[in-house]
Length: 409
Ligand code: ADP
Image 1 (tube, rainbow, N blue to C red):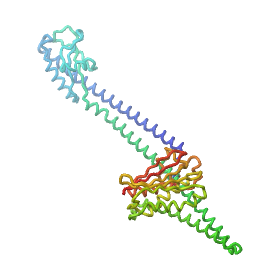
Image 2 (image 1 turned 180 degrees about the vertical axis):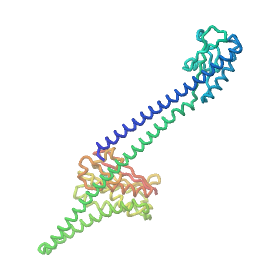
Image 3 (image 1 turned 60 degrees about the vertical axis):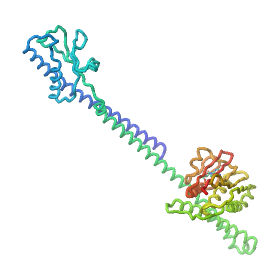
Image 4 (image 1 turned 135 degrees about the vertical axis):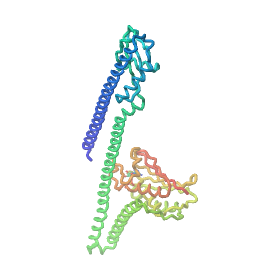
């Protein structure tokens, strides 16, 4: 996916998500305000009825001082009328003396402050009550936490759902990006492999053409030269195919190791020997410090050999000057340690965490000049994992790299 397209998709999604939240907010507010209006209308009509009834009552009983007013009856009358108007909430009731600025009665004195700020106030001046003051019946509806939660529930739910969609969106984008990266790596792998196979094929066909020429083939030295070129190139192709095959085999779930008691020190020695010629040509050297005694281990011989081979091969490949490789073995706290150290270009911190990923190759500096497929270290890590061991890397750019493998045994 192209970068501009990703930015475009993310922006569209962000705008849509924000708009959705804003619309939800507006809708929730609108619903609240409609509910509030209906509630206020219901309370007003109930209170009209209450006041009408109170007036009728005091008209019957005649003039009385306010002190003899039955406040309990006021409470139950209001509760009754509220229910008849379809309002289930139980209000706090207060009788407020407007000219004194104080409450003559409150059904819940602890919550008088709610009454003071309540918008539900109704003038009350029954003719039969002896009072020169202006009276108000004030109602307050304390909202329970549950009611508040209930009211905001839709909003919280929509916010939560938007969040879930956003997380899913990010996960999908990351998956697409990873897929894209993997695709790129695979393409690079295929083009590398084609290149690597084409070179020996053309060298072999050239050598064959030479051998077909009688004048050249009759010369024994020439002939053996060309035959050894063919054998070398053939060996190179076989090693290449072998690496790819082994790596593919390892990825198979049914893959199992062929475990037996093997002697590691001689394996290290023989792998080192096989690189002697290459190292001589490049004025390099390989040292072995085989300190593990005994050096026998229960492991898969083929894969452990390949593992050491891969690490030494990398050490040489990524040492642009004279390669200097040190391979050591030792026993430490019940573990068998194999170390492969080089003094080459090293690996930067940010690449170290990806180095064991399949097809991963460091793509900076002159590393691309070195041929490879990015599967060697992944194979090494898989071999170590199947042996229940660990692999670690210490490296600094320009100072070389040390791979340490720790196997149980
Ligand atoms: P490749 O076939 O590319 O060598 P590997 O899986 O063996 O694949 O290594 C992955 C990448 O890790 C290499 O492309 C290289 O960038 C880096 N790397 C591996 N070993 C070393 C080393 N000893 N020194 C520096 N870089 C290394």
